[in-house]
Length: 282
Image (cartoon, rainbow, N blue to C red; front, top):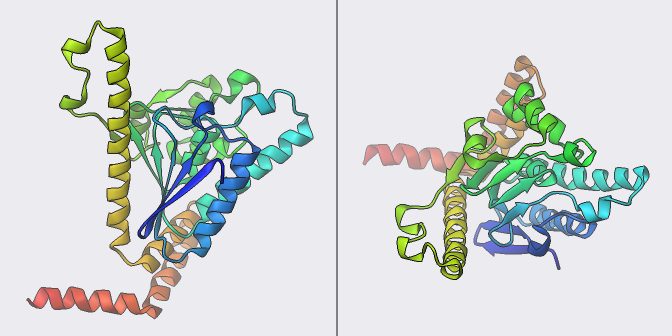
């Protein structure tokens, strides 16, 4: 594929949007390739956790392709949004846990893509927002619905109505991201470099790569923690949480009982319980 890189790492798969010259914006080809990639991951039983990120250090995904949208008609716009929502919904419904490694800009459709993931980890240089109103449209790839469910309607309205970007730390404070990965004291630009534009630029590029590596290491570490557990139990837990968000409490609790009981049919449950009991006897 031209725009999507699929990098298997054992039972973890990294999906990378590879269009850095356009800040990884999602045109129709990116959407089509991403949809095919998710289909591959659905069928691949060896993959237990998926990480989605963007190529380079500047952007996770800058959203929809404005150069494409500027001249299209309403019917084309509807097809564009429908295809984008379809793949984003597919990611949300994927049985495997999905982690968004938010490196740099996650704007518009990029924010909407990240929100469809189960867990979001951001680098400290991330900028997140729904700026669609600044170019004459509302969010169209799920932003008006998922953002309010994650941060509440008042904060969602503030972000969408103003179109302003927020920092990774602000996103963490409102619960939009789970964790922020920052540089250590040894990663900053050294004093002797300051004042020399060429050296500052070179060092800044090095630091951005270090930060991005730390972000991916953090996401991989989390993914490995998840893969240690029962895949069936994790898969059922994801389904229960997603279904419960749009159900009343009584319905959600009843679904939880069914999901809980269903896991008793799988042999890994008995093996893990027996291992736990035997460990306690040692």
